[in-house]
Length: 479
Image (cartoon, rainbow, N blue to C red; front, side, top):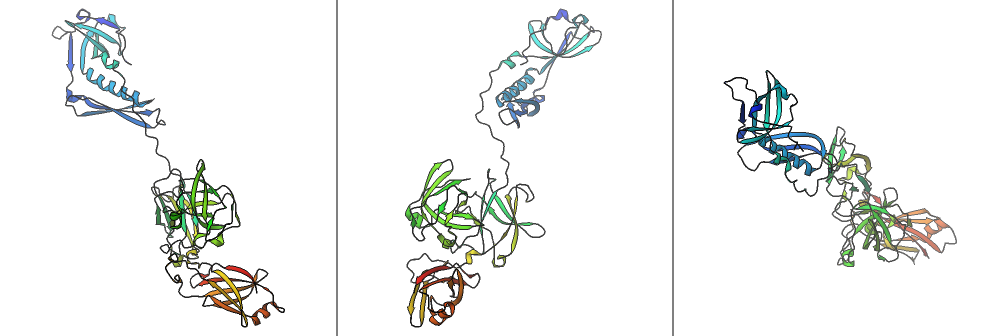
């Protein structure tokens, strides 16, 4: 506030005449084009985490096109800065008139910055002394002052203030080696779930090429993932699990319930487990919010997409939960990548791959999408000269069409491996090109001796030319 009191009141009689041919005082009025039309003031914003900000005051009349920028090494709120900018602009225009005159040496107490009142005939002017030169008298240069400039009402406060841009950190990654989820998926490729707080807009997955890194995939949305907070017991296959409840605390995103028709159509698919213990693929119909970011999931479909072998007897708390929606994408791979270790990096797409926010890791594709599903409905029936072992095969490709008499084979040729088990270890391996085979009495006698045992344990797996034997299904029967 520069609305200071008047230091002295002067009249024409107080001025000194330096030369008879010079006037006692002179006034100069600056041209409008010499004055700014806008004034911008830079400052540190008090309610904006002390970041640099700027406000602008504008004169609504006149033809000047000049702009002036000022830096204020001050911390203030935006409202105060706007008021100061407006005052500074009006002060420039109010002080466009400067005066020059000489005072006697007896007024030595007046100095630059003082406000004086000068009576010049019928008018009285308020002037601020800007410069004093000591000659025969005191030569004064002063500028016109308008006190009303400093008495204006403060501007209305502006609502809201932009926060600082969040700094992207390293993303959280979860690698998922899963069986083939649909025929459209790449059977050679694993899946990658990515999330981060704050989400950087996009995360890039890069692969080392020896001399640098090339882009493999971009992830435009964070995955919905978290951890299991209570142990999950083993459940039934091929039917709804009414008994178990799955409690999940999410690190990002949210879950919702679906109808049974939506569930059977493929909604709410998730993976539970870890890369070390394996992933069970399951679905859930009900998702009930029970706490902050915590859901209880029920009406489960267990061991989906042939992941039954990965269903643990008791999945402990702390297991990873990943919703398998469109945000979870496969790592591009081909047949030549199976078994090959790859050096990968993932991080915010806006940053260089050498930035600290990038995470480096290695991955070796297992090609679980090529693994044949385990056969079902194993049977052993006594027949002439031995025991006929039979089963029904499953397919990993396009097997959901109920109108088909037979599901697609999904392999180049049909082949099965059958292990005869004794005390948990195979004692004989048979091979069949059909869904049945005879285990002869002679082979039984050679494997177990006489008398022939009344109990038989065997297991069956379908064989892929690319993957080898798939998941086994085992059964013990009385014969």
